Structure formats: C-alpha cells, structure tokens
Image 1 (cartoon, helix red, strand yellow):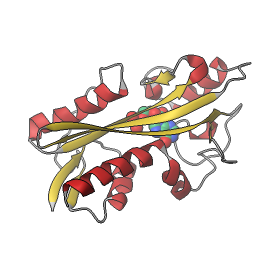
Image 2 (cartoon, helix red, strand yellow):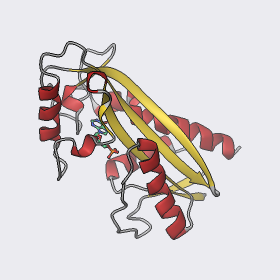
Image 3 (cartoon, protein in one colour):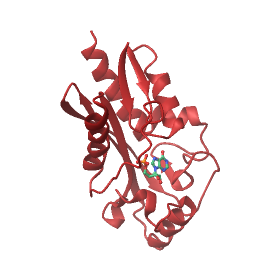
Length: 195
Ligand code: IMP
C-alpha cells in the first residue's frame, strides 16, 4: 500500500474518496492523519493555483505524495463569479445562506441563469505535478429548493435533472458532481500508474 495524502480536513470528502479508491493500492490520509494542523493558505485567484498551493504545502513539509482540490461555482451572467471566491462570496466568515442570498440578488431579473460547478484536483506524485478537472453544468434556480447537501446545492439545478442538488439523495449527486468527475479522473490516472 502506498501512502497518499488528501490535503483536506473535510471528513465527507475523505469518506467519498476512500470509497472510490477501494480497489487502488493507496492508503489515503487526511491532514488530521498526518498531524498537519496549520490552516493552509489559498491566496491565489485561480482554482488551479490554490489547489496546487495546498498540495505543495504538504509535499514540501511532510515529503509525502499529495493531492488537493479547489471548487468554484461559475455563473455565466456574472462573468464566472463567484468562482474562486465561492466560499466567501458574501464576505467572511464563510456563510452558505448569505452566499446564496447574494447570488439570487445578483441574478434578480436575469434570464440567463446558466452556471457550472468546477473542481480542480492538483496532484504531486514523486515530484511531478498533475491536474484533473471535473465540471457539472446546470442553472441557478429562482429560489432555494431542498435541504440536503451543502453550499450552493439548494439553488443549483443540474442540466437534464428535475431536482436540485439539495433535493437529490447524496448518492445520486455523487454520481454526477464536479468533484466526483474530477476524482474519477484522478483514480483512473492512479490506476494506470499502479499497473
Ligand atoms: P471547496 O474548494 O470544496 O472548499 O469549495 C469552495 C466552496 O464552493 C464551498 O465553500 C461551497 O460554497 C462551494 N461548493 C463546493 N462544492 C460544492 C457542492 O458540491 N455543492 C454546493 N456548493 C459547493
């Protein structure tokens, strides 16, 4: 079993990854597992740079292979905003209710409600950098619908679906989500490396 750190403290993400990595020869460890207690800065203006900054922090400090993710909601009528600022769109500290309220206010009277979630995963494996992208397209609803999930889920309706992310059972969301798509690509890549 090879060790691979997922630079996150979000236990839901760790759980999701572990289930997708069941058949791979990697022991996935979270920041907690390696006793990394520092808040890793995400100072950049792109998802790609922030994801790589998190992976590099761990790789340099702990000398362990590592990957990290960064996600943003990109709304076409808002020129791609909130994008990399999704967590703190309505200010700090991050607050999903306020973020959704701001998006709904920004889109008041707007007919083009097209949006996408984008996840970038940055991987450092044996000193080399790799990136994996996952996107799910959809639209922003006129109001919050559903109570499941987190973040912007109640106002995101994926294309071709009749339920927002916040109405869907989590297993259904995880089949089509931006994060699942990026993780699938990462898992496929690691599988090739280990054969
Ligand atoms: P992170 O990079 O995964 O921490 O995501 C940044 C922000 O994007 C989060 O704080 C949420 O507001 C939003 N976000 C990320 N993934 C999702 C999702 O699956 N549903 C809804 N919002 C999300």
